[in-house]
Length: 252
Ligand code: GDP
Image (cartoon, rainbow, N blue to C red; front, side):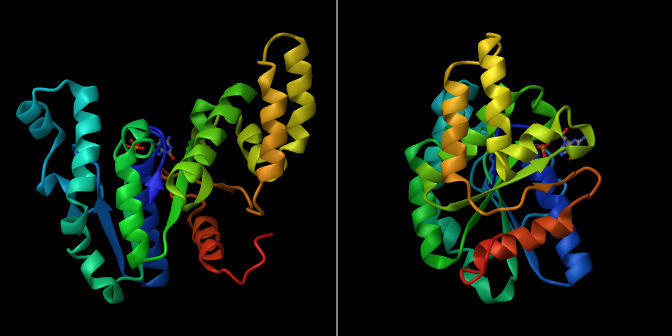
């Protein structure tokens, strides 16, 4: 499952990563689009939620504005979940090596709503799931940005119960990729910077505490930096996902 804030690069990364797996490894990849608001997709989905409803349908049918429609659409994903999971590629798991799922653009309207739990609990009975949580490197200027985006991924793990793997995307236009990388790899190195920034009044009092929590909850995951646009880092992303599925492995 590819999750992340709107515009972080879920759709682009699915296309780049899926093409890389097919071309480099010769494996069968199915892409699934669960975003009813998608306009143009770079990949060809095996299953597309827009065959059931689009955002425009939801707005018209229920007389809703864009935000209400996003929430209604996520309820519809849950309502249609049995139907969705009875169709290819989910009905045909032995045919596919990987299924890459594009989640609705507005993370808060899907991941952080009850609907996602319904969908994930049904899906997890069928297959092993990893959540690729995308951190947009172009959205990280300061430490507060890095902490906020990283925590959103942790909250997604709490909310969905699936293993979440953070990935830093848009590395080609990163503003401060060091912070995002250190959060995943060595949050202790950021605590001192946070203390200084707090004393200067730049950062909230909460920031060093949150970084300490990051340290406690840190998984043994190596930071992976990718660029969906330039196709960079696909190899590292592939091995990271492998590690998640390998329960016997040492993740360091
Ligand atoms: P989504 O809403 O999370 O699915 O994000 P999209 O895949 O639609 O990407 C949002 C915008 O970011 C698009 O204009 C993409 O071209 C751009 N984008 C995505 N990944 C990258 C990347 O790695 N580098 C750059 N420079 N732009 C990217």
